[in-house]
Image (cartoon, rainbow, N blue to C red; front, side, top):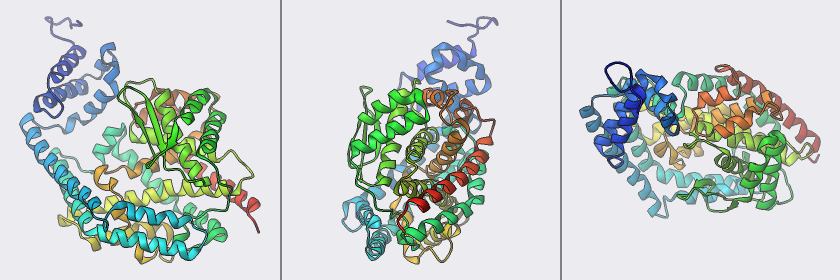
Length: 484
C-alpha cells in the first residue's frame, strides 16, 4: 500500500483506490456507490498525478472524465435528489417514445422503408418515397416533440443547478474534449458550407437537383457484402499498413443484419452486422463498420472508445476505402455524398439540436410547428431555400437519437473533419501515428488528436482544407468517368 510521508496518511492514488473499492461494494445505481465515485472524482481533480498509479491504469480514462466533471458536482444529498428526478423523467419519456413503435401508423421502420427508395432510378418514385416517409414522421411528430421538450427541460434544469451554461458541456466532458472545441468545429463547418453547395451543383448535373435526388447514385455493378468487406480491408491496409491484419480480421466478421452495428459480446468476442445494400454507397457503409470492428480488435485499452474517437476511425476507414479506385465514377459520387452528408447534414442536425435547447430555455417547451421551423431553417441554411421542400419539415421525428443520445450528431461532424485531416497529414501512415491512435482505444478525443500528432485544434483547419481538395478530386473523377 502506497502511503504519503505525512503521518501515514494515504496518498491521493491510494485514496482513489479506496474510494473505488468502496463503490464496488454496491450495485450500479446505488447512491452509496455513486457517492464513493464522486469522492474518487474529486480526489483525481485535486491530484491528477494519482492517475499514474499502475493499479488505476484500467480506469484512467474513466477517472479523468469524472475529474473533469468534478467542478460541477453537488453535495451528496443534492446529487441523490437530482438523480432520482432526472432518471424518472428520462425513463418515462423514453418509454413514451418506445410506445410509438407499437402502432403501424407511427413505427419508425415505416419511414425508413420508404426512404430506401431514394436510390431508385425513377425520379418520380424518389419523390413519392420522400413524401411517404415524411407523412410517417408527421404522425410521429406530436409525441416526439413533447418528449424532446421534456428531456431538454430536464437537461437544462440539471445544468442550471450545476452552474453549467452550455448544454453540450456534459457531452464534451464524456468525450474527452471541451464545449469551446466543439464550438470551433461547428463554426468551421458552418463557414465551409459553400463547399457543400458546390458539391450539390456537381452531383445535380448527373443525377438531378431536387431534394429527393439527394441519395441517388450513378449506375454500378452490384457487389456482395463479401466483396465490399474485402475492399474495406484493402483500403485500410493501403492507408495504414500496420493495420492490415486487424482490417482483414474485422472484414471477416461482417455479416448481414437488420442494423449497422459492432457489438463486443459478454465473452469479449466482437460481432459486426450491416444492413447491406449492393451499391457503392452500401460499400462505404461496410467500410465504416469494418473500421469500428477493426478498432475494437486492435485497441489495447480496457475501456471502449467514445463516440468522437470511435466514429473518427470508422469515417477514416470509409474515406480511405472510397478513395482507392481512381476510375470509378460511381464510387467517387458515393464518397462525395457520404462526406457531405456526414459532415454538413450532421452539422445541420446538430444545429437543430441547439435550436431545440434554445426554444426550451426561452419558452419551457416546444411545439411541432416550432421544431418544423427549426428543422427547415437548419437545412435551408445548408442547401438554400429553393432546394429544401416544405414537406420534409418533420424529418427530425425519425431521429430517436435526439432523445436517447443528445449531442451525438456532432460526432460525425468531428469524425469526418478529423478523418480528412488524418489523411492529409499522414497519408500511408509512415510514422505509424494512425496505427498508434487506433491501438490506444478508449482515450479522450483531445488525447486522440495529440497521439495523431496535431497541435491543439490545428486539425480543424487542416480537415476543412482537405475537404475542398477531396471534393474537387472527386468532382474530376465523376466528370471524367460518368457517361455523357
